[in-house]
Each structure stands twice: as structure tokens, then as C-alpha cells.
Image 1: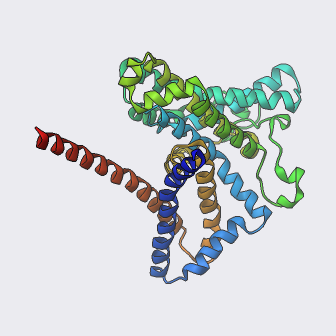
Image 2: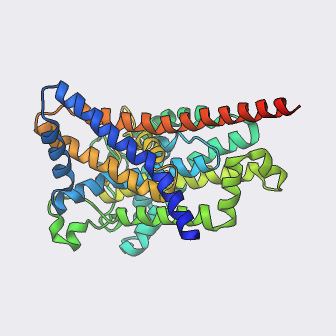
Image 3: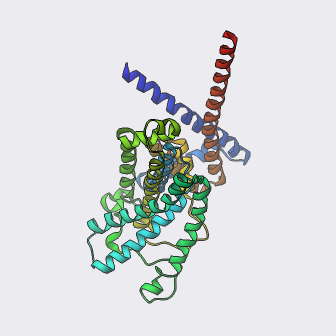
Length: 373
């Protein structure tokens, strides 16, 4: 009986996202026809380009990895009633602190082995993101400053902070005495994550690295924290109704800060794994890379559930990697963006339908009470 109930809840949770994805592809097909192309050819290019072989699937996983982290960051904060728009800034600070930590630790302690150096830089990268997110959490809990405003401002600030350190303290010209460059010093070899093709040669040209396993472990950890611990219960209680939670003896202020800190850790890890697994440096940038903003969409489609985020991030990874193949087939790259946008609109539509239904229920109840009186 309990299994049937769980199955019903599971179906109830996934039916809207699946319907939204299906309808999005159908509407995307109309756009493709409008551009004078065949949707079957376009979608074949999309899926064969992202899933047609282990090397292509590896590239899809590469694009999926940072989205899992940023999706987790947004969804974890949302469970506490916080809308963390700042995963982007936390990602940038996480990447910056990872490079700094790798260089400093390697310089101070000599050639540390990878099994010591990699966990250390991952922790420091996560703490960098957590520290950046804690600013918004603190201002929200102590002064009531809305987290959307502070996190948006912190996103822009993070870019300028990052560019400042790239140009000065972390530049190869400062630390290694070389010419000025538009990026930081490189992460030491021992601090870099292993690429999967070194373990499984079938991954071919793909650059997917072991950061994907760290991301999956983080998703499981987020699920465990949220649904199997007292801390998770308190965070979800605050997110459901902060007044009721406070009445029940739960500290709203403490949980708001903690939720933002943990959320920032996930976003910081996105930057850390991207640096340690792919770029090995941080570049001067006029704008942020966008993983944090896409993470909002990933969290929405994943229904703010850690395991839903895994599936949702994979979908966005498929769309992102397959877009290039679609473009080669002559389909405008923007079609993928349209499909992503329509998915989000339909997911948001579900919330609007539920909101309208609740208002109707309240009105009906009120009308019944007045009728009895």
C-alpha cells in the first residue's frame, strides 16, 4: 500500500516535467519547420551528437557536471525558501580560490601528491563559494535584505574581484616573473582531476573528468541532508512556513544562513571541478560563464529535488552538446535555446495552475462557510 502511494507521488512529480519536455520538443519542431528544415533531421543530429557513442556521451557529461552543482545550489536554497540567483558569482569565486589554493599549497609544501592536494583544493573552492553565499544569507537573516537583490549584485562583484586577481596577484607575471597574461597561473599537474579517457580509452576525444563522480556524490549528499537529517527537516520547515517553523522552536535565522552556505558550497564546487578538471586556470572575462543562471533552469525542471536535478542537468547537457551538431546540420543554434525556454515556461505554468487551484479552493471554502452561516 505504501509502495503504491510512493509510486503515485513519483508519477505526480515527474508527469509535468515530462509533459513539458515533450511539448517543448513539439513546439521546437514547429520552429525548425518554420526555418525550412526537417525536425527529424534536426533531432537526430541533436541526440546523435550528444549520445551517439561514448566519446560524445563523455562530452555531454562534461557539460552536465557544472550544471549538477549549480542546480543543486539553487534547489538547496529554494528548499529553505531562498531564491539563490547568485550561484554564478559563487561559481566564479570557487574557481578563483581553487587556483589560488593549488598554487599556494604547492609552493609552500612542495610537490604534494594528488590524493592530498585535490581534496584540499576542492574543500577550499567549496568554502570560497560558501563564504560568498554567506554574505547574502547573513544580510537576509539579520537585516531582512532580499537575497535576490544581494545575490545579483554579488554576481557582478565576483566578476570584478576575479578579474582584479587575474590581473594582479594571481597573474603569471607576478608569481612567475613572465610576461603579463590574461589568465591566472596554471594549476599544478598534481592538483588536476583525472580525465576518464585515461581510465577508459573508449571516451576518446572527450574531456569528461572525475568531477562527474563528485557531482553525483554531492547530489546524494544533498538528498541525505534534506530528507534524512534534522538539519534538512528544519531547512524544509523554514521553506514551507517560516512562522510555523519559528513557533515550533526552529531558528529561522540560523537555517537561512546555513542553507545559503551549503548552497554556496555546491556552486563553489562547480567552479573548483571546472578549473581542476578542464581549464586549469581562470581567464579574464567580461561576463560570467552562465552555469549559475542555467542552474536555475536545471533546478526548476528537476522540481528542486537533488535526484531530479541529476536528470534535469543531463537533459540540459544533452541539449548543450547536441546544439553544435544541430548547427552543423544547418539548424539555427537558437532552436535549442527556444526549447530550453519553453520547458521552463511549461514548468512555471504548472506552478501557476496549482496557485490558481488553491485560490479557487479557498474561495469555495469561504463560500460554503458563508452559506452555512
